[in-house]
Image (cartoon, rainbow, N blue to C red):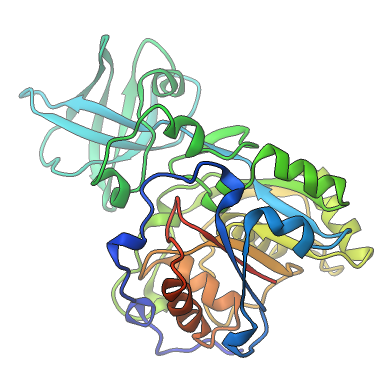
Length: 358
């Protein structure tokens, strides 16, 4: 499909009632509801309503899930300006091991100050000397310990604003706002589709002959930044680090050769696979690679060898919703699906229910 030139952020706006936003996760990860939709255009009567724990029945032996194993860093931290005023920072990374090093961060209400002291219950833990840049701040972190160690010990989980406005992060969020297979620290938001997959469900999937492979994309400002005003072509994604290992590239190729389907778990896993596919050779296979990606998937994008997407229901005017529309063919069918999900009582956003496009 050719890219539509008249699509803008307004095309991806919809009304989301506050009662359809789940503020705490369900008791068990896999008990979330699951809306199953065909990827090809079809009647909305073809939608089915299941539970995430039904995935072993819905998928077939020989299929393969591809998950994002990035781990959320507790990147929200308190700071003081030289005048003593308290501000809250969201560290965007990079989460390197040596001090000093440059970091980027967001902060509401921060205006003029060149130096911030980071602190916790045990006192000052470091400082950042900074300048404003591109809607965020960039500065040099200086502390006795590496920044990642400080954040893991003293930081708060960066819950999305629509949750954080209603309640503070608590101890349970350190586990539940994290996938069970997360491995590589580096994200400031969870790859939320994976929050539905518990260890028991993963074992059931593997026992049924459904493979599981991992890629890495560290979720940053690029993923959760709202759409820019105007046409979609004017929106620019911030770069995020991704990696596809030799093992995962081989497993994907073997699955495709055997006739199995590749199902991306989450928009970040899909963006990783598409970013790698852009580097494919003449054989069209997803290669092992790593680097930075600012890929913005919108209607008109030609997808690689990915057959399905497990994803949550996303915020209005978000790049994630645009990606879902593109994966469905770019015909705006997402709107009817979302309307149906709301009428059926599905919960939306990070701790909400899920959708499988297959």
